[in-house]
Length: 151
Image (cartoon, rainbow, N blue to C red; front, side):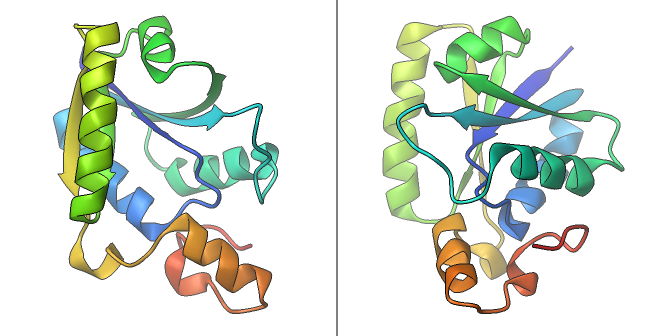
């Protein structure tokens, strides 16, 4: 069974994140959308809310599950029997950063491959950071987040 983990903070989930998962479905038998919890950082939105939004966004897809985890992503992948890490790329800067992380992950766990999907052009400018900033200042973020949720 081909299992992928799509890790992130999803603070909040964006339409770009949703697009990556939905486009990756034909590649994997199961995708685990996983919120990595960093004890040194507190998120803008509570983790419980982010988990709820992920479940609402992907509730129509039986092959997608939602989890949270602490620690290294490769350790979580091993625990979940996942052989793949799914990542989305928006820009060349994303590629450079993600390439380094993927190479370290391969050194840590040689049996876990990272698979990259390019963001669709309409989502290249959408980041969780920008969505948070718009929200913080009272702007309407509906066009940036999955239609299944409201913030």
